[in-house]
Amino acid sequence: MNGPSGRLNNYTALFVSLLMIALSSCSAINPLPPEVNLMRLDVQEVTLSHVNLLADLRVFNPNEAGLTVQGVDYTLKIEGIEIFSGKSRMRQIIAPREYSHLPLRLSSAHWDIIQLLNKLPNTSEVAFAMQGSILVGGNRLLAQRFSFDKQGIIPFQKTGL
Image (cartoon, rainbow, N blue to C red; front, top):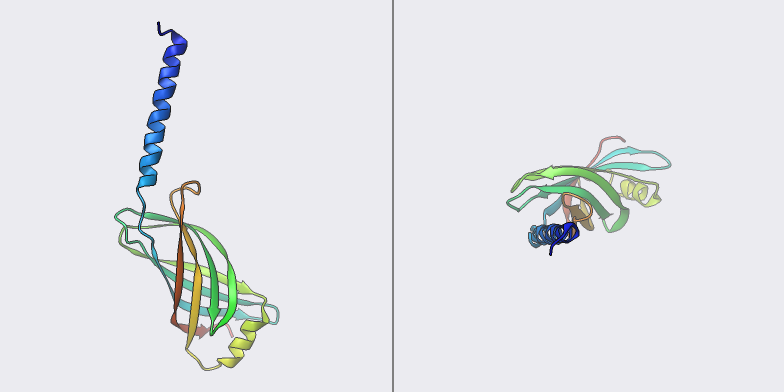
């Protein structure tokens, strides 16, 4: 004796089951972490109160499907001095097995960077260490966070000085 309410319960149970299967299959597809590299750091402007830099992050998507970048959290050290930390929210799709460039606008009121710039008047390269995480996924609810920790030497230009 399946009445109208019995059929509704069956349809509801079927719908919930299909929804759970769809969600579990989406979570089973785990993307490989993207490769994040700091390629360049340009000083845009230095004033008595702040310093503005533009960091160029190159991100490689090693996956067979596109990745949607939702944002980047970062801490940047130059020549061993912690200069910047923060969050950048963006939405950019990176094609499968492709590189993309993500510009990060950095601004700081710290006196440390002005001292650093005074130490490096004629230097075209600097040592850096950048730690953080990149948030990828189609929506924020199902997005995944991947950590990165990079060190090296990068070009350094004082264009706005």
